[in-house]
Length: 403
Image (cartoon, rainbow, N blue to C red; front, side, top):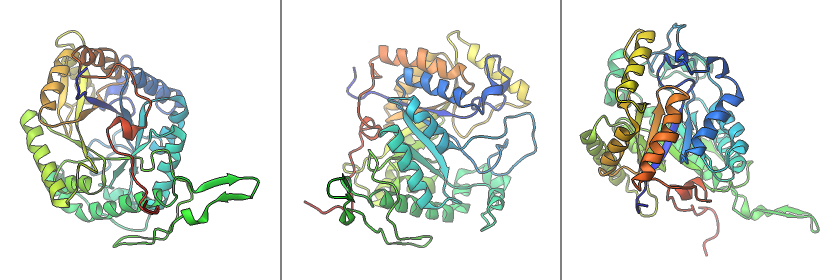
């Protein structure tokens, strides 16, 4: 086994990342809103020793473009709450990490902190969280408390323009992450005494007001939820441009980037490195894991994956587009790509199955064995937390008395 094995995550979304995936022969459109469907996907991913799963979420129905709603009725619309879905899967799984997406533009950090800490308790140290800003102005109408910038089609074609327009929302999201992390620390590890003889349930001196005062939030604390098994569940973010890279460098443990080729990976990782340096982050104490996202269509027969994607394109009436590279090929060809790009400095990959369950099964039963054969992937899970699996140090509680 290599001393630097790959990390693999899988991003799950309804019937797959192709909008026509629900019409594939082995799709299960009648089951998308059933707990059993997601439990079967999670079990398959865990059989494949995947590091963690991510779950998409939104504040409005899906649309063909990310920045505004549409009225299409030929694509999947509707979803379940990502945190509640992950909580359902927590007792049904044993090792795999569970990382739901939570919109932070319209969600209070106190609620985020409690929900993710509770998930970490339910999963016994396997929880994470992907903070996401609201990039659609229409989402604000569901809450009626504020407005957010309306992106144009021109903005949507250029990630740096999007980042510039949404920079205030990223600044707010940075505070959400900071408040959430402080609330996670507001209970010390041993704050609960639970001594029936003396009648002392908690040590009041080990619960802390965080007294956070920022530009966007004023939060006193403490949390209502005792410190979770990881102390600080894993925080991951998706980044396409300079502002999101800075957001990841400030407060995240994992960043998902979207290169389209090896040269793109080198360029993007250099930008992430520059953001880390600007933020003054010490990666020896607080490493930032770098994952590349890929949409994948996999088949053993050469050319079959491309033909399958073309069929789905025809059903949808347009060729699939994505914010990242779309790979069609064999598991061996994908293994070649992953191992090649790894040399640019990537720690792992988050794979987005084009169609479910087909491409998830191809990942777990074809790609993973191929990577293992090449000494690039584990042969069994360890017994630690998700943080430990990713090589992230156990966080010290900032409010605990220093030894």
